[in-house]
Length: 162
Ligand SMILES: [Fe+2]
Ligand SMILES: [Fe+2]
Image 1 (cartoon, rainbow, N blue to C red):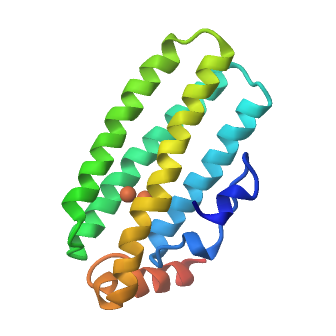
Image 2 (image 1 turned 45 degrees about the vertical axis):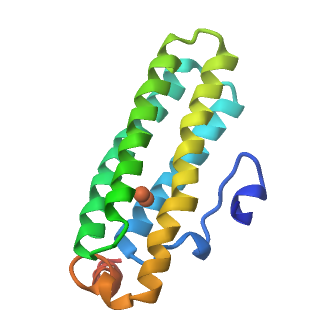
């Protein structure tokens, strides 16, 4: 497990070790980290179930777009494990659907809070374990990220627009 996440049980802070080196994907991962912290705060502060549900819905909607985007880039980069990675996204999406149904049914705050935390953890684990594998691939083959979407071109585009 990455040190970033063990500093505090409830707060994730972004640092360069989480960067995959592709500006547009890093931006989505940063947004995800912000959502996780928002969700954690809501649960710690015992916010009501509809509030937590709204945050989860938002996080899952963004995750689904992010998965699609990531898969499109992995295909462009000819990442060898892209099919496996896409299968992991599909499995996560199934798990979310199942856990969200359990969340909706749960009426004891302790139970639905745990369901919310479970979804968050599945996403965090995916980022730390699976996404870091393609980061390592890109580090070994920096030219791959430059061929269509992401990489230097994306970093330049982002720098120009900031
Ligand atoms: Fe990702
Ligand atoms: Fe991924």
